[in-house]
Image (cartoon, one colour):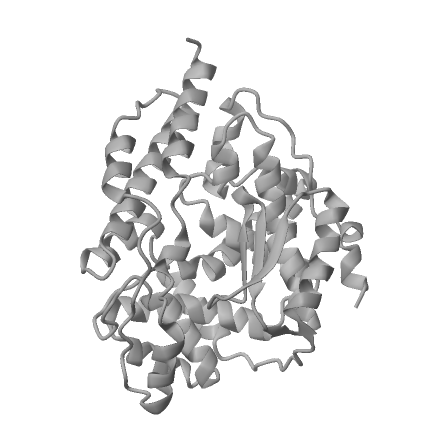
Length: 367
């Protein structure tokens, strides 16, 4: 068997074994009830409950352990991806336990001191007030026109969930919070953030000979979310409030690892409404049952840290007069800036078919 097919076999096994992992399993099912308790007592620490896992983490770990390693640049990335999934499987297996936070930090990392320092500056920005006039139902209609423009067969629907929006690019599904109202700017940002970044990178990755380009390279998330925030800014949609919110997530991640929910929540109340402070604090304390204990999931820092890294990446590209090339490189699939050097050694790699362009966002002008 040639090296190309050996790599494809490893890549295929990795995808098949981990396809059932879903971050939805970290969303508490009693979030609304616990929020009511916090409204009554700001010092109350929620006791989260979770739905059963959609997969068997022990079986997944067993199957992942059987995957061979290939001695090549892409082979090493696949090995790192396998290890990353092992950490995630352990993380899910330890929901509610002390080890959950240990594996979360292994799987997603923690914000750097430089990121936290910059986040503290952004946290003092004034808040922009946006009137929420567009229903989730109307927003889905607007967003769907963008999918039609690209020719992507996505399923769009309202759904009961804590997040405002959720995109499952691998399954070609997009959900908005049921009965929720959104501001016009938010809907535009959603199109640029979700479709112009996450969906386009996933669809370009789908065209590559290896599924890792669609599923995501190890630790690609910082670049992924950073590029999404950068695109929001590039299209003039990143408000001070949005930047402040991304910054708060990193600070909340750091605080959550050291203290209780109530400590995070009451700190955030100095900068946001009670309801938004609850939402931010709940995001970083997911994975715990008793949120009075330190720990939680750490992935939320990726937005602001990624934004800073991607801005630096494109600033350098502009100085070297290779901006277009730098943009195309990040759109070959769901890769991180750290993996760009690997691309030259990937057999069968094809140029990205879909790139975000001003003229493609026709639906932004429709409301």
